[in-house]
Image (cartoon, rainbow over all chains, first blue to last red; front, side, top):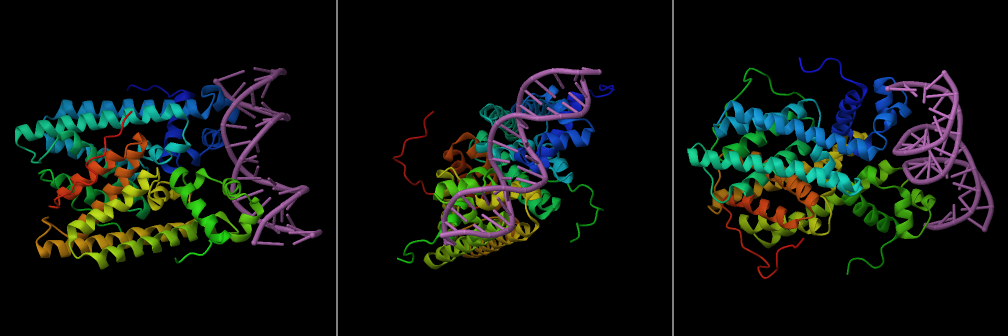
Length: 205
Length: 205
DNA sequence: GTCTATAGGTGGATAGAC
DNA sequence: GTCTATCCACCTATAGAC
């Protein structure tokens, strides 16, 4: 049990993160956080003086947590196929909760973002691309993946495609759209996609 | 010369479209339009009573213009490779102007959007997917494209990947990132990508 | 750390004169 | 069609009591 009871600062970050992923950085206010937490706006400002501060901490925490998840994947498998599937699953899980990737959402609002947040955003993308490129290269050498050209270029395409697939799938409220796109993307790399949760019925409406 | 002098309503739409593509639907205000047009906010409201009205007309006009561009491609070539390249070029041109796809931008803000806009958004995506699927199927039958599986699924992946590639590339202010991703995507379908503007130097900074 | 109170600004939208 | 004037809700942020 790593968390005893989360402090107010942490709870603010949790709520703000959710709000950004659902409504965007310009789509929520300190009032929203205060209401959800049942405290006053001024109390939120006590923990995060400005919205830019809050945003910066949000990205940083998200990036760290992501890095931790990637390290966990590395620790549990050296097989590129399953590693990529687990990577995709991280995005899919967010989408299932009606959330866009935090950084994908912020990327859309990039011009409306405080300057400091832009560099943090890029670092997130850079780290993901680096990790993906390493997995791709390893998979190709091991013979479990098949693709031509440079691994970093494919890594960028994967990241972009997953962000875009989330974006579009969310417009339809249809996670299956994302899953299908991701599966096709991985199939193009030679990953033999396992079907999970076959018993589940397709989304209606 | 189809346009004599654009009326105020048209100029409002032009300005608003640009603002949405750059800053998002929640990232601009009637005041921004009024300032740019050098009229008052109330005059903007005269042409588009509410922001939801303005947004709806914006999507509709964008969709129609896009449909026109796709029809033009159809009229000028039956070869799938060049058709896809021209399709990609539409997105690239927007990005070169620091714009995100209007509908990709709105998709990010979907939960903060007036209800009516959501259906219009989906229609845009649907039409694009339909067109892409048709081009893909035609290319496969003609032997100029090579891919396995269903054309509509690939069409969705292409649309998603292009939207995502715009999103990420814009965070870096790097159009080349988009171009490279798009080229790799098309290469996966067997399109032999021509290099355009070879003489141009790579982006600095 | 949380509160009340408020500043100072901007948001979308409307009334009514010209 | 455009204007001035205005409404009111909401925004980020701060001052200062408890």
